[in-house]
Length: 78
Image 1 (cartoon, rainbow, N blue to C red):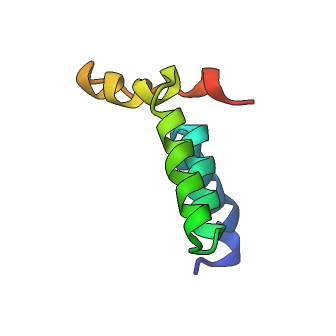
Image 2 (tube, rainbow, N blue to C red; image 1 turned 60 degrees about the vertical axis):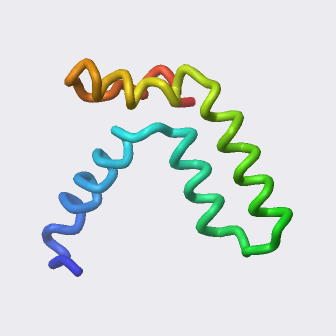
């Protein structure tokens, strides 16, 4: 909890942290949190993750780490 006077600042700080992450990875994470634990849902999540791992977007984070820079996921936002 934060005081009402700091709410806008805190929301902006959290939003900036999220915007620095991979948009597709965040979408998968969000869906997995909201999905129930039925086997078909889990299989769909694993299949989707497998597809994601073949994209340039999934390579940006590790590449940025090796190059000692912040990742740039802006080309992958819609």
